[in-house]
Amino acid sequence: MNKDISIWENRYTVRKFSDQNRTVKQEDLEYLKQVITHVPTQCGIKQNIWLYLSDQGKDLEFRKWLLENGYWTENFISNHGNVKEYMLPVYQAPALLLSIVSDDPYINMDEKKDTEDLKNLNNRNEGIYIGVLLSELLHLGYQVGTFGCLVGFHRENSEQKKQYFNQYIRENYSEEIDQIEKLQNLTGKLKFFPSVAIAFGPEGEISKETKVKKYKNYDYLAFRDTPVKKRTSNVINL
Image (tube, rainbow, N blue to C red; front, side, top):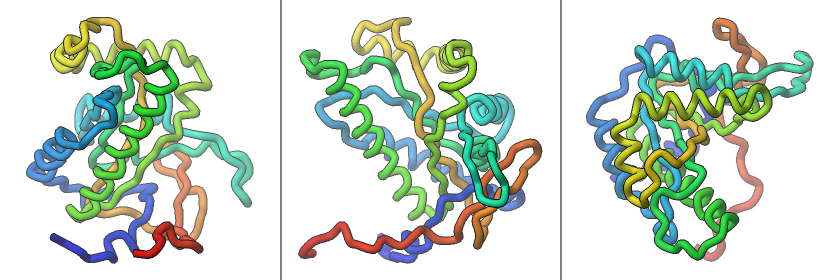
């Protein structure tokens, strides 16, 4: 087991990945698939699905749509004014793991739970997956960026975007979706929404200052080279 703490000490949220060093090993993808399969859930609730998207073909075109229609926000940034900031790695990274959330659980071991309970459980479950995947990717030697800014998806033409997203998922992953929905007699009933995206690759761009940069037609925020250090510890008496 690799116990090199520098993997975490030097971790940073990649805002742009290398355009040259982009190899993602197939054996690493197979390993991650097995990890996702065995991540535990709370109360037997399953409401999120993980989708792997490469940087080729229709995967890349879909990622471009996700970036332009969902993963951006608007910020006031000193010396730049109001900026439409794109979560660029959703489109530009060598590889992407996308969490897809369903409006109802496709596995629910306790149907007495109300909507708020299910929402909270799904958020916790998704967080567990994100933490596990982040850790595994770092220990596999990849740089990572996690993004959940979906202002674009909810602000402009939201219903049309929801319709397109669901249509794309059902047309391109029909066999998998059918199998999932059959688990609780939900065939054709579930609606799906994009959630947290985990971008990864072997090398990321490092910026020692916060500034707006441009990639093609997209403004993105280059960021610090290391995480902000915590002033207090989360650990007591260890």
